[in-house]
Image 1: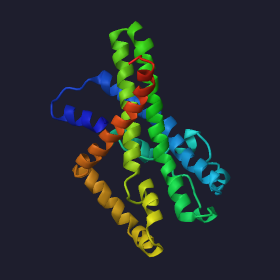
Image 2: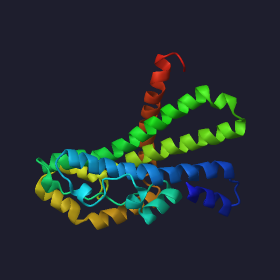
Image 3: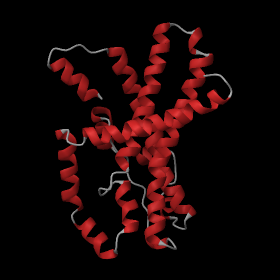
Image 4: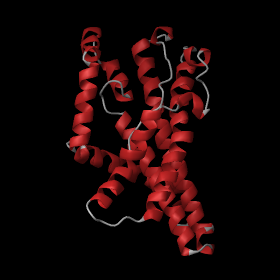
Length: 234
């Protein structure tokens, strides 16, 4: 993300400012539209499973004002991963707290993958029916926007599925842990978070995350291409 452009400029490299601009626009779109959707998905699923805490707190909404976390938004712009204000969920309102909490947590990353899939389908339609009638400059700008938008959403889904508190993956894996193991798991949450950031900034997680993100991205793009292939358009 932007940190890469800053590094390139710092070391005397060149930067494609049109490319960076479209990446920024795509990231801002994700911040104001998709991160609220991610949190809404948590709240919606919790409500379907019997917990109305999000609605009572006024968080069952797509209004970005209710969801945007300034630091999470800044991190997404700079580093390509970020977060919003978590929707409040009370697992004791669920019939099966562990299972239903895991399902509620999974709803967030799934919303990112669905958002990426919709982006892929829209871009394919534009590529076939609209972009051929536009200038090269505009076509490249649109392609760059959708590429960044889809990649960011897939990356957020994969990142949130890491089994590390307070990410969604930790709540999913908790469904398979005993109460004693789960309490120990969350007791060291702050330490685990610091270790996570250290690993992210050191680049240790780049390869495993890259492999998972590429696999998820290929799957999303394959599904996005499928309707067009079925009708002989691709």
